[in-house]
Amino acid sequence: MGEFRAVAVSALLALMAVGWLVVVPFLVLQGLLANSPFFGTSTHEGDAALTWAAWLGAGLPLAGVVVSATTRRRGWTWFFGLALALAAVVAGLKWTDDLRHAPPPPPGPRHCVEHSGGGNECPGD
Image (tube, rainbow, N blue to C red; front, side, top):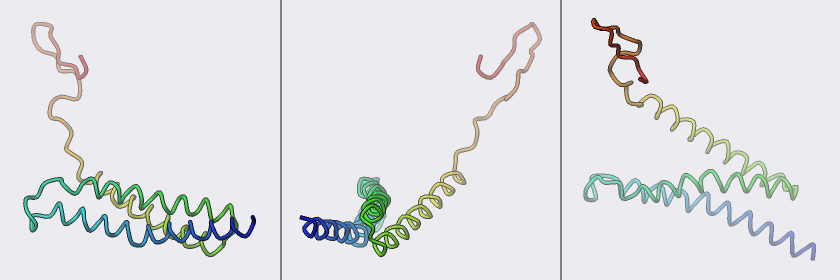
């Protein structure tokens, strides 16, 4: 039974690695091509593929690290650890890009402005 478990865990780790190396880039390419203006209109048709690529791109390495570390497979742990680090770098770059392109704050007073006659315009009132 122990040998079957070892083979099953190795097969699972290999499938997760193939999924991360083949399926995730395929989904990214599919999403980018669907969203590009060269192949039709520039709509958000490829957003579902990009969302799946993001979830699988982070989830497969995380699951791979957990499975390989708990079954004491050093090579797989290193592979999935590096893949997880790469996914974290990509997520961090996306997050900083989103912060840089955040919409400007709404115009208007950010403090109370007194008007003659007793009225005021306070944010949140």
